[in-house]
Image (tube, rainbow, N blue to C red):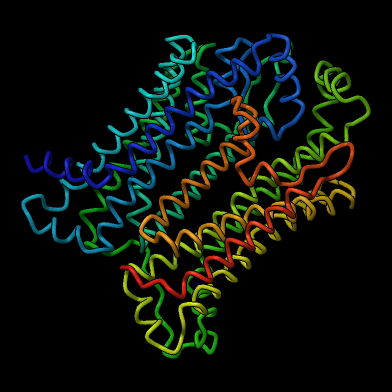
Length: 538
């Protein structure tokens, strides 16, 4: 009975977050199935696309392994890794929200003093997370079936998506045992998910094409990733559920370790001890910007490491592109037919595509500065801070400047890493310069998200966090995958990421970047103007 009450409490608390995640992932599956069928309805076009994908490791890195040119298998190749990524994020956030966050606020200690003790809440969280992922799996399967795909393969895809989510549910619960705060646990869990995505991508990009160049066998790094385990079900072509045993085994091991650790530590404590505080504060903390930097620098470092990973991949894979085109004659012939004499353009496409993800990381890092403002407001520390001569206007402006600095640091880290990777692989200095151009091209979109997030914080602070992250997710799907899933151009152009500069035969068009800078300036000015009239809302 107590377990049922705890489960109802979790369902009640997640009555908004979970439906958005579950319905959103299901809708993405449906739209992808319909959109890919409309965009790639011709078998010859799908075959050419697979050939081009094999020639460009960036595509394999971002999408996964092809397993034939049949429409059903082609849809799985195009969208599954993103379905799995969404399930992973949903699960890690859920795990942290009902474990470390509960301890941080003191609610876990109150519940632990009841007959529920410390064990049943964790059991309820595990059941809650598993049910949420099963719901995601069912909607993914129904979305594919509704899009006209095969029933068996659709259910295999749903099972694979749910299995990835359950794996990261266990990982999120385990990370929460070590982290000292919910923010730290969310950041570490997201980093692990990102590493899993990159390991899968590296293994896929370095895979071996089949003789007919319509499928690939992944390299060994893929087998280090829970996302890749689910991908190896090869839905619609092989429908092999055996790799999912690895996902479930990982989840079981994590949960067992979590229950073991839960009995060995005090409520609210973490397995990683915090360092001792300094007896005297440094002079940098005498100002609002210095304090904001002190609060955010670990987050900025974390996102910058993600930028470094993107940069290393962007620079390192530019060499692999040329090698693959010479290793497989079929791929080389296809590229020559599609873009005669434009081998260098393929290298540029790889570079700029991966820097698009560095731009997403920069935007997320900048948005977290505004999230920090909202957290300071809700916990009451902002009220204490603003009781000093510090004004609300100066407080907001300092955080906005910190967001701009965060964008610059993340993208600079990506550009430097890419340049070093290019030089290390024997590339030309011109490609190093292009790395910095690609990084600069991502700045306007990141600034738009920073300014719009600040405006949301000023006008509707209660929904700052969910609305801000939702806009980032929507922009990512529309801007980067809109063409893939058949979204109309007018809707795709809503996303800032759809207007980032990209190289072409006629040169690089920066008009969209200039427009986005203007939008960011207007949104920033409005947020600064309205914050004068806004009261603190805890």
